[in-house]
Length: 374
Length: 140
Image 1 (cartoon, helix red, strand yellow):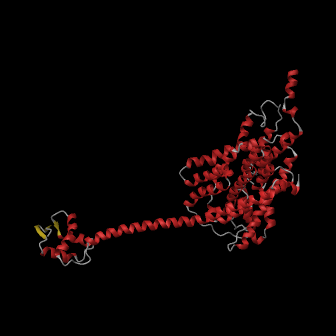
Image 2: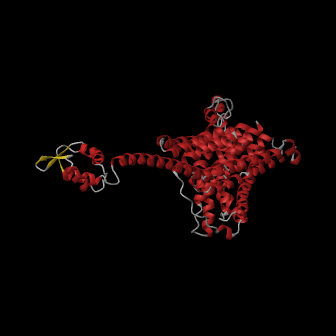
Image 3: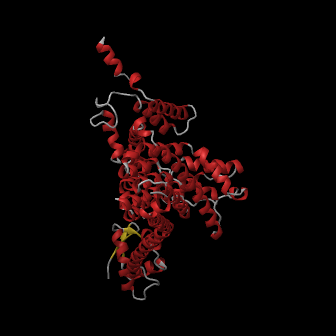
């Protein structure tokens, strides 16, 4: 009987506290959004299920929890804390990215730069709210709307915040259809939303092959701290465009990125243990993340309007919202908003150009912030 | 510490504007470089194609030069000189040969008025009858 009672006291039912229950509920919401609503299912399903697993109460000291050394989850989490998974994800992302629209219209890259202003504004806001500089930088990078980049920088600067920062970044990426359209409509007139972009020129194979080499050199020389992200990103893209490593490219854009995404999502989800995750800081991070993401969207749109003051061939300011690096969610949203105004207006390819420039921009920002605060 | 005091203490303003300027200038430089990329590539390709063209035309000139030494623009007044220019054609023919074959080849190579030259060769006994309508070449 004593043994049975001892067993009962070690079960999750006995050890559960309200924080675990709250996080289990959040996990269910993630799974519901990913499965039933199909909001970024590739991200929300692993994260949501990871939340469920991470919030099963257990007897501390058994080497079970993600924060306990020698546990299996801890070893899987190693890829997050070292920045390994984000780097691998970037390799696959590079192998999937088509830069032809960006090469055809390089000025769209400026929108990717403008959208990074949300990061620096949030940096100031987080500092003002009392976060330490390294924590503030980790929170600010959420404005880049790039999950792997946010996790990478947070792992380097404020590892204790990986859970909330990652969850906030991925949540806002999933909530793009909710967050971005109102900001886009608020900052643009109907006349501006109706602007049609001119046809993109054809880009030669040589340009596509040379770009990743030039891009890697220029960006990594500028911010060497972004090498783990941009090095693999441009390498993946070079393999894709080179056309001689078809097998490697296929593996990078399927198996490798999928494996990294599964473990990244699952372990980030599992890292949201109620007792660690549910703090005042997490609430602050969620609020600042929303602000960062909104400002990033707004600054992209506003900068596009400023550019139009000087351009003969006007650009549709909605494209500025795609300057955040949520690929391809924000590009799709820009396209949909434009289509709602005029079904003959196809902005997807142009928006993808801004999107891919946003990926580069946010990785550079991560490198810059890391080098500032190391 | 909160508010502006916290921002100042962490050197926040400098971090924000320096970071913004770096990322912006970095992407501006990258966009400028890629905007010039197709121009640089087409310039390079033009350079290479011009080089190839020049190289080819030099080779053609050389070949034409060789041909000029073989194919005269007019009928040489000296029969020996004319025979020298026809001698390489004869090398391609198995001796004895029909005059029609020599005529066809010389016309194909662009020799001026081959019928007159061949007639002159006959009269000068450079083309010697070998019977059955065939002729042999006797270099003067």
